[in-house]
Length: 436
Image 1 (cartoon, rainbow, N blue to C red):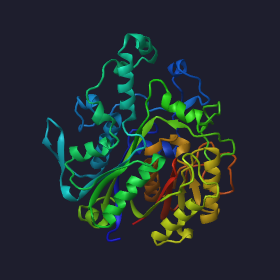
Image 2: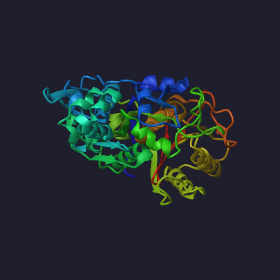
Image 3: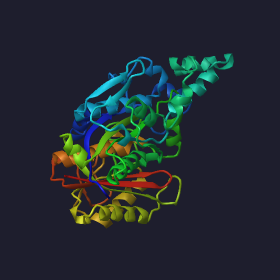
Image 4: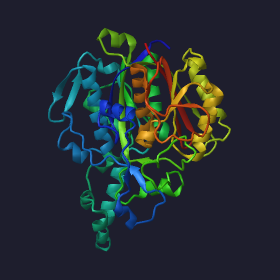
């Protein structure tokens, strides 16, 4: 690699917090946001899982947005713009408005030809696609009775901007357009590994000298007026079936029965070459020391129980970083709460890193935000490196394996850390972050 790549700012939207500080404090306080699933979903089917983590009617409100954006952009696109605004504001980079009508901006001191955007998402504008489909369906008299059941006013009018709203690549595109960034613009779609892989690809572009600056992360929004998306995971048996809302989300615990479905979220990380960051006097949160991904080619919805491809991935990414496995001070695990995945992941961690390294699951607080989850966890990992703080895993009373699971938030020296993501389809990814 040609350059060292560093994280200099972040922006977050999540049920656990609408900016980085709120999100980080919720993690440290192990404060989750769990609600019963909407009652109107039960008009359409019964559900085995009864709880989820919703975004609770959040509407972005940064000065980058126009009133018309709320009608013309998918919610994923709105969240990416808002989270990027948070990151750029936190970075101290000033910006000027080139076209106020279209809200086109230019970042000062950033070469737009060497600045890029990398966004990961599992489903892109699926909410806009569903809204368009239901609006078409409900436009006929035979189906008008359904409109009162779902009580979603957005379905009464077909949105003429449906096509750009539902495009999977729309979130990366709108951010590049609004900021006049002419460098690489990439969308990564690899289910639950999407956010991690987008950050990793941005890291490679900066480290290889193709870019000086990148905005990278993950976004997902799974709002559905009838609960159909939720039902897909529920009927597959992947969601928590524990009836107590306090303890229903419990990754790595022996009582786990599936993951807590999160309606969505977004995390954007600012990644720069170390030289570029130092030159502009940037605050450096953490360095990205390595990235690796793998494809297991085993099953669309299951990990290979042997975990050999995951093991090879983790050994490879640590080796790429120039470290030894004993030098990893903290692991932010994928930790979903599904029965088989937690068993395999904890087994592989034991084989590769042993029983001493601290391990936690951010999903024990946030639930599983699918394509956004890896980016949210990358933010947590970077902040753990910066602050030497590791949040506890909530509801972890009887661990599945005798590892050093962090049950309560604590101060811990984190010089080097690893965050990992595993996805349906067999897409696996990991990042090694560390102090500069």
